[in-house]
Length: 223
Image 1 (cartoon, rainbow, N blue to C red):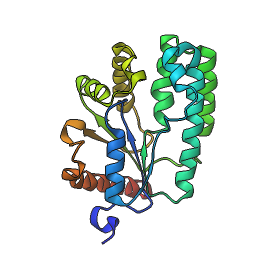
Image 2: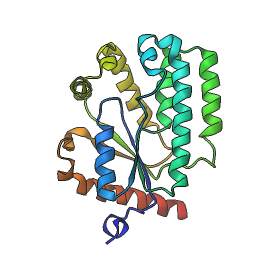
Image 3: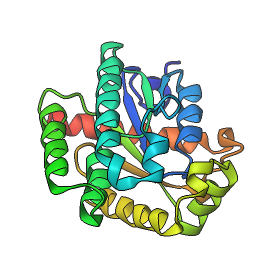
Image 4: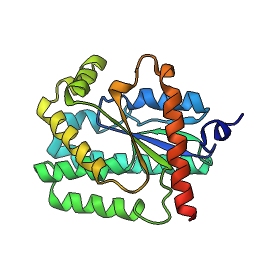
């Protein structure tokens, strides 16, 4: 029995996992890919030449970091569709402009000129009919306290040293972003309804929901 027969999920589907830092995107990505037999696509943190510098000086490095992420995510999106789909992707390309770059512009840690340059580049690369968008974006959500607990438990020093106000700001902006996102279908999952340490216990109903969302979307496009 194929995954399409069982869940209604095409073998060429591309599923993107979104959510604020520390919410459990990597765990969900691995769990879904294992269950579906899909490849994974993870955000590249190791080897990023700007990340450590950025956390020490937002204003100096925010533009450089955003352009780096845009280039890396664009290349990865191209690779995914050249493979013919069948991927679960950790973090979407849309969050960069809709949350991070916008936040830095409004807080004064990215100049208006740099933001406009970045936004123009993003629109030219991504917001066109030729750019392959995912079949489904899964948004992981939970309370702010739950997210902070997850950040503390994974123990990354640069995250531990970042003021709590930054994470609160990001959390609120993610909520606002997803409420207005309409580039592809969105399915929400509350992290308290999903066992991060035993994902196989609750993966079945998630797969069924994914199949329903994708089939409904594809049927709508055909109609």
